[in-house]
Structure formats: C-alpha cells, structure tokens
Image 1 (cartoon, each protein chain N blue to C red):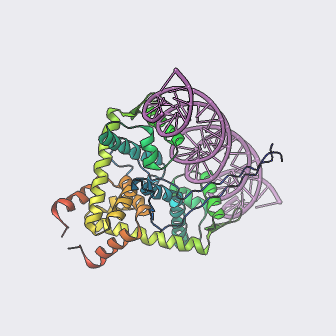
Image 2: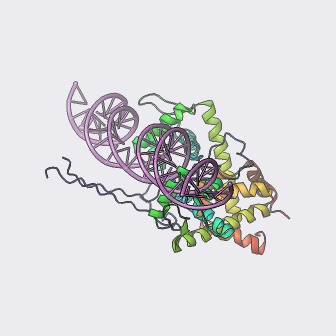
Image 3: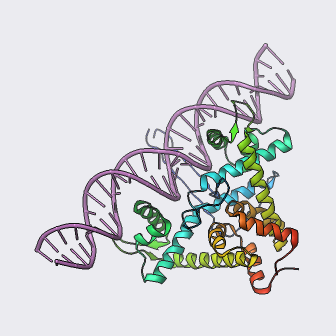
Length: 162
Length: 162
DNA sequence: ACTGAAACTTAGCCCCGGCTAACTTAAGAC
DNA sequence: GTCTTAAGTTAGCCGGGGCTAAGTTTCAGT
C-alpha cells in the first residue's frame, strides 16, 4: 500500500475576520470557541516577532540567545520556533547568523506592539498597577478584537464613555 | 495503485485555544514572561469545566455530546480531554455515563464563570457590541489577574474612574 | 595559531489538543 | 425483540511548543 497520497490542506485564516457565524442553526458558542481557539496558533509568533523587533531596536540585531533570555526557554526551543517562523515567512535566518524580520514579520511585530501598548495603557488607566498591567496585557493582547481595541483607544484619547 | 488514493483534507478554520490556569493567584510577578506560555493546558480545563457546569445547569447532566457541540470538536477529542480532566481531579466519569464535576471542578467552574461574566459585562459597558464582547471575553478571561478583575468589577458597580 | 567558552544546531523524547477510522454500547422505533 | 442510529470508545497520526543531551561553530584572548 503504501501508495497513498496524503494531501493535507491547512487553512489558517488571518486575524481579523470575526466569526461570521453563518449559523447552522446551532448555538453560537461553538462558533465563538472556534474563533477563540484559532488565535492561539499565532500567539507565539506574535510574541516572537515582537521580541525580535525589540531586540533589533535595542541591540541593532537579534540573536537567538536574546530570545532564550527573553522567553526563558532553551536554545533548542528557540531554534524550533524560529524555524517555524521562517517557514511561515515571518523571519529569515542562516546558520549562526542573527534573525531578521521579513516585511511581513515587521508588519506583524509593529501591529502586535501597537496593540500591546494600547491594552497596557488602557489597563493602567483603569487603575491597575503598572506591574499587573504589564503582565496582564501580555496575555490579553492576543485576544482583543479590532472593535475592542478601538474602544480602548477611544477611552485613551477621549476619556470614559457616557 | 492499488491502493487507493488517500486524500486527506484537513480544514482548520481556526486553530487554537487560549491559555491559563492558575490555581488562583496569578503567576510569577517578577518574570514577566514565561507566564503566558505554558499555561495553555489549563485554559482548556477551565473552558471545559465551565461548559460542563453550564450543561448541568441547563439539562441536569452533562454528556460528552454536549461538549462536542459546544466546542465544535470531535467526540474523540472530548474523550481525551475528559480523561485529562479526570486525571487532574476535576471531573469524574464512567463509561457511557454523564460527566460529573468534583468539588475542585465545581470550584474552578464557578470561579471561571464569574470571571467570564465580569469581563463580558465590562466589555459591553465599554461600548463593545454584544457579540464581540462574547467572543473577546472568551479569550481574555484566562489572562485577567485578580487585580484587573477587581478593577473591572469596580467599574461595573461604581462607574468609571476619575 | 590555539584554545575555551559561549552561541548555535541536531536528534530524540514528552505532553497537549486536534483529527480520522473503526468499533462497541445504549436506546428508541416499530 | 430486533434494528437502526446516536453516543461513546479506542487506536493511531499530526503539529506545536517544551525539554535534554550531545555535537558543531564562532570568536575572544592569549
């Protein structure tokens, strides 16, 4: 047997398009969950490109060891992740060379950074301590839709609703 | 030839889930990073116990098929997850029987539910649409610390800061 | 030029959370 | 009482993101 052809298609919707819920009649929770779950694939990617961009800003270049320190994981893990990022067209690299962001990677990085900043500033404005804002925004940023981000931005620019 | 062609299409509209498990009490204050990742396993646990509690509230019992519908995953996946939850002492179950929450599971469920409700209500109050609030709160709830949750609660009870 | 330490790579293993395929059990219709 | 079907189970595979251990490359210093 052996001869089977294994064709695997993997669709990864980008980022924004909310659920659409065409609804097959069922409750929406399922759709909602689908969307929520779908995000995580790229969370790590976003964290990495953000960290890479930071390193480049700070040291001119990003070496794997910077990411090792930043994420507190092993070199092996960083390597694996970088390979995935490269496969996905977000970074380029060569053996023993620094990691570079592609255009797509840069775009994603600044997008993520911007979102992160808005969330963090919003939390602070909410009255949360700087430290908690820093920690929580790390986790929250990946789950904030455009609409919610807009609402937060509005608050930062124009004050509270009502 | 023989064998036929194995055509395997795998559509993954969405992909992943959100993170977080803290027993309660946030994570490492000092190391900002590291927290976000590695938590994933327990986020699923929280989502599941929450869904199980909901099913029990609504239908008296929770069957695996309820979770299959709720999360839009296969029966096999639900089974695996339930086994993990059982291993972790959050639920009890027997072949072909409904899933029951242990004391720990119930505790985690109501905790998660409460957090979820606060986050969702807060987002709505922020001016976000009901639908977006429902979606975003799903992802955000796992990353909200006690402090941030408290700030949101305060807003709901006493209005905006300042 | 050599060498030792730091940076990097590779191989192999884990668990999680998805999936398909194929099977078993439980239950409702008739 | 079958018999069909829904529900549940099991086995096996996959990718993501961790790890350790062991080998390779780079590069400062001397």
